[in-house]
Amino acid sequence: MGSLNLRKQARLKRKKRIRKKVFGGLEKPRLCVFRSTKHIYAQVIDDTTGHTLASASSMEKDAKEHLEKGNKAAIAKHIGKIVAERSMGKGIKKVVFDRNGYLYHGRVKAVSDGAREAGLKF
Image (cartoon, rainbow, N blue to C red; front, side):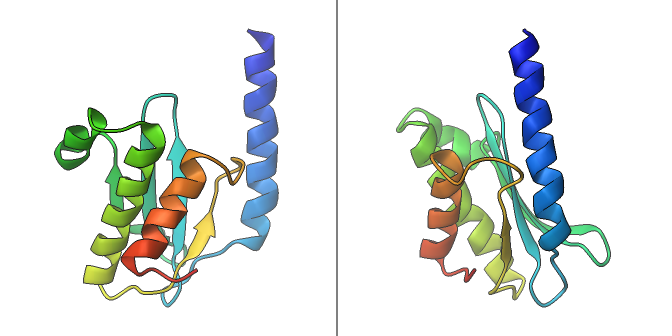
């Protein structure tokens, strides 16, 4: 049980180090990814105002239909496509990717690959 706490503390330490450098403005907002054991969430955030411009998660109805069809990485890729389509609909074409302290591997990478396939540039 103690190792889980140490793992979370290490991720939060990495997150703090990353967030010093990664900042999303109005012309290039931040695409932030959060992953839990079951679900994955992605948000496009404008850090100057602190508002979420677009978001998608695996808990939505559209994504729940894909839950049975594939594994977690396939669902994460689908979430990346959804958040990219929603942000492109609002006129956002370029973003800064924030991996939120997670390794750029697996589901986090799948979200970014899905967003890139849908047309987001970062």
